[in-house]
Image (cartoon, rainbow, N blue to C red):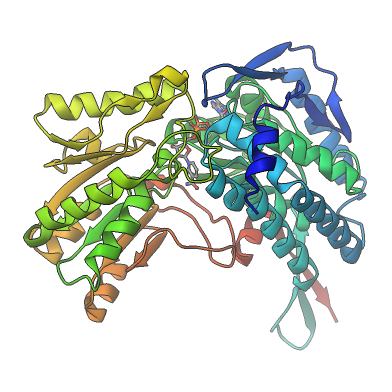
Length: 495
Ligand code: NAD
């Protein structure tokens, strides 16, 4: 699929100005002017995009409200809704490489990962929920003989979605695919630094025959468009993936408006725990390096804390550093690149700030720690391993969202559990051990939405993803995702 010639032809293709998709109209009128889109590959202006206003968001919400209330989507025969969603998936698949390259130029993810994790993953997700939508049944309750208790499942209404920049199509589709399949309508706001591909997806939805107003995308600033969606009295459910501070605000906005339900997928500081009895330490080192350094660490489930049993600490770090050094960092449109660009200069500076702080505390910057390839104008950072980190250090507790690994040694299983659970987060974790009982004990003891055993990061659409503690609530992916988008209604009928 990675056709180098085609990628090179797309690398410098002109990117037209991007606009909102509202009420079935691509490049919908907007009075908010435009924002420059800076490519992290070279720090240059890639294109401009519509800078949405509150009015733009309100028009999109009104369109979604009308489209929901008149039943043009929720009242459509399920087989027809499925057909449109499947046609949409086909159109996205046909344009997968174009979308992947556009996305890479917008957010910096390496092309190999971007193609699979972005358009192709969105295609798979849309197909999964499209296929599921006519397999959702209500219930007949086991009531007494003189009544009939029916439990209907109904779409909730207008869904607002606010998504981040690291995997806009993958994370976006985890929300819009089940929401739309269930019969809801949506207004989605992409992140400022990764909007272009989601806008294109919305344009393709029109082409696939999705009725106007069902799927609207409004680009612009979080503090304007995002806030307008979150404060709207006409949005029934708000789904969000992003940072904790913005998640907190959304809960406040819901409280200040219509008490809309808010589902949050927030950050993580995921512990990757390597015991001395791990079956294959070389494999553990290889997978652990990928777990933190792919996409330059800009992955919510990144394995950003490495807990290593002290007896193998030096040997393991040696192996890990070897793998990390062999990973090619740089031009994300080169298929041999293992880690592309950091999304923005702000994010890069934030990453370097964490390293400076660790250095000031006397921690050992084992490899990396600096910006690289500055001459390209792009935002690249060397994979960074910091050893001797104390569990109380900010680097051990706060999410960096960059290629910076905090290494913490431990002596016993109990200590590993204590350190692993010692942050406010609870998104993902991994345990490397050859002891089956220990593996099961650790899965039970670790507070996280997913615990990997002798691997890291594997997943597919059939299993749920969600955080505990301050990593969020609710679940994306799997059939459980429908719970957010379907209400239960009881009919109590006297017989
Ligand atoms: P962010 O919270 O800064 O922004 C996310 C979205 O919120 C963007 O679209 C932004 O425009 C919008 N926003 C910003 N301020 C807003 C406001 N006041 N009101 C409404 N919307 C507003 O996050 P980010 O920097 O784009 O993404 C990185 C974060 O996302 C990291 O913390 C990462 O862990 C998290 N993340 C979590 C998951 C997960 O599944 N748990 C997945 C990917 C990323």
